[in-house]
Image 1: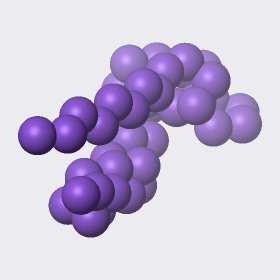
Image 2 (image 1 turned 60 degrees about the vertical axis):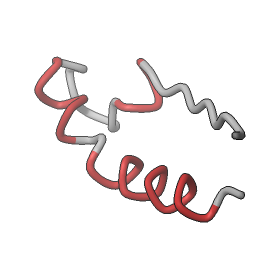
Image 3 (image 1 turned 30 degrees about the vertical axis):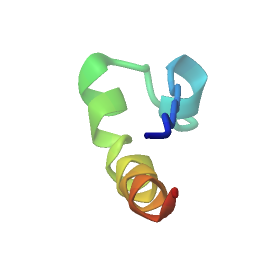
Image 4 (image 1 turned 180 degrees about the vertical axis):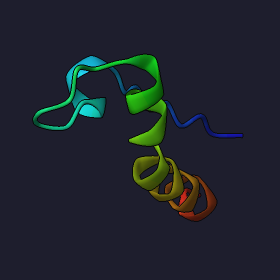
Length: 44
């Protein structure tokens, strides 16, 4: 079994002009989380 570790936080989840609220950060996770899911599926 292999382990894939991905860390995202703070500035990676805040777009220009946003306050950085929890709600904004969760909304901004939509794209990277789908990319991480693909990476996890393809990671062998």
